[in-house]
Image (cartoon, rainbow, N blue to C red):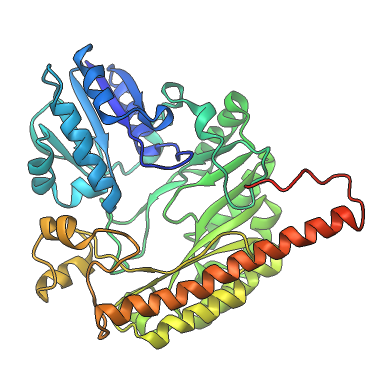
Length: 436
């Protein structure tokens, strides 16, 4: 069969490599199908270009996958319209976190022939209807993403925190899923399914050999799942001479583990902190305490690794006081590696908070969420606090004003320090005031 996969343009200056699409392409090729990739992300083609493209070609299936973001939702509607406007009828398949959580609704609004729920293992994408995939328990049986079908020269230009301008940055998964069950998180499959360390290293070596990779961004929801895994992982990745970044858990961020990660080339760990209040953390089932958060972040900074400090506001139990606890924390531990603002928590379909919003009458259904409530990720979709919507947004504005002023003040100070080094100390290595 001939299959076209759509790498859509989501408005980024340089896009992330679509790992899910890469894995899907690899599975299709493994099963003997011919795969083309429509790289709208690279070329910035308008959606009507896709219609003309399909008018000239015949595919047995056309597929696209999206997460549950408001922008991705609207992009999916536009792409679906473009596919259906083609003169030829193509078997249209959609998937990803968004469609998986509400397949009937997504099939209705996109006029898709098939919606894949979960992973594609055990699914015949050429069938019609709601197709339920099976989680692949042994993820090492899945072939590496079919990167040869994608414009990798483009994706490797994407920068990452603490990557240099000369780095070639590539995305890799070390496993699928997460062992935790936070109330605001939706996953297509339960639990955590790690890849064997030797398989991860083989893929990294392939990326070094074929594409000149120097920096690996692990896209996992959570690479730091146990101290035992991290010790073995660090011992192996150190041999490959790449720098890397990952997502981590602060209850595992001990000085010993962090020192191993630093020595193995880790330069950035993205932490899901979410709140700086023990009661709010308990209610969201984060399985963290404020004490663990502070100790872990301080230990991360102490070894010279940048921590990504992710906080959300509006969970059950949040107040204006808990918000400014978070602001105080972010101001204290910001090392300038990234711009950090605080966003409202969003109850995406499929997560426990979504079910709570339905039960409390704050949401009607998926259509209400996507069409009426979730209009922007920086605005409230559902208010779980005792604050009015006006007070909520006003407090968030004040909080983010502080954080934004701090970030830009720091960047201004760095530029002035560079100018002083140039003109006062005659630093001939200066390369100009370039926007990065």
